[in-house]
Image (tube, rainbow, N blue to C red; front, side):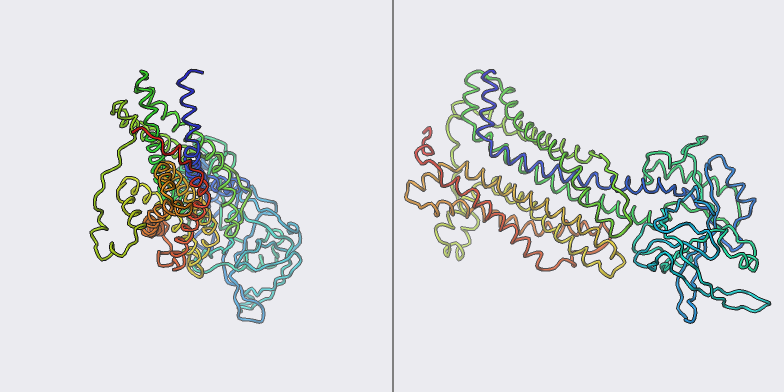
Length: 633
């Protein structure tokens, strides 16, 4: 190994703490972005697999009047070259009166084929398929559907026209089985087709052979009201979308289905309406949630990456600044500027590439696994189909790598403009001057010396102040917005969006956890670098007789003051971020946030600073006064 690479490795070892902290911060950012970015595709793939296994219809042709679809209409539609599979059935939504009461139960009745249909396959969860007259199956229980058991009897009144008089005849129907309809996934209730403002209380399935024959003789032949169609994946193809591993939310699927729908409508059949999955309540609800998750996956990562970029800038700038003497030696030995720059670029790339790999490895599988179960409170959730969709994470990782390289090149070239003799000398401290707070006489006079000293140091190094304040503000904004999103979700109780509460809660919790992790690493990184670059100053204080706790509080006082500025700025940014989120999510408002979340955000940040202070106090106490006071004068 040549001297150049030994020097690179030695520098990495000497700056190991800063580089590890930088890597951890970048890892959190990449993991969060990658996890949220793959969540929506995973949800779509999981439910698409459920649609695929259930052979859901791509198009439902419904009759718009009670006469139903004629045999000619059914044959004409089914014979279209784009229609691969068709299945005819009858469905009707109607209120049914319970015997002896005036209570009406919103009921949907399906009259299905005797055998399990090829399209929209009903999954038998309990019991058996009806094989006797007056036997029925019912849909599995949800929040609005009545909870039935196999063997239960349902008594209903059905009006019959007998000899010109309408009589309510009571029928006793026996439940032979409980089934799951692949198009009915909502646990919050299925809307009635005749009145979408109402939800169904019962969904009953009757086979044609088990339908009482004397009712058929009184009412006549049961009309066909629905024709379920599965279309070809492309013109002339014999495959359906149930045969393909394709998302039912993809543009390819939707475009093809709408193309076939237009060809059916072009037949000009009367009293016919074509519906697609886009009109299905479960499909629409899931798609709407996917859109909301995409909004969160777009907005939150922008803040995460901004904070990470600022920390990268601060870390690499200070790393290069602390190695001015090494840069001077390398220049004096004839090492070219390009190789010097590459030394620090290499360090930045190693840290960010490790962060990218670990972040992708953690974020892609972990976040979907944590958040996906939350959908079971809203919909019947099929087994999760984990989809590797690293695009968002890769873009975030590349962005962090490019920012790290650009920043490192900039700060290194800035140092290379100086002569080796100048680089061997410590940077001259910035000239002292009155800060704005010193001009506020009535306030300045009342401050003790220790606070005056701290404020002068804070406002003297403006770049350091700005970087610290913005970094802390960014992490505080993320914490507040995450906590606020929990409040917004809780406030949905009793509203039209109440079903979102249990789903958005876990997402908000994940946001808070990642924001807290980022906040801890940011504060640790900034404090650690602050101590490192001021060792000589702290050693001087020790020589002058300052006790350990006085030296410790000297440095932490400044860190806390700058962090406090960042916290209050972060609250304002957090309110703005949350407003932006609720605006695009189209539910809730900043007004839903409880007052204790404002206080809680500040207390959490302060708690993290105290924890970080405790972790780093040993570093201050272990400063070697003799070594730290050595310098080139």
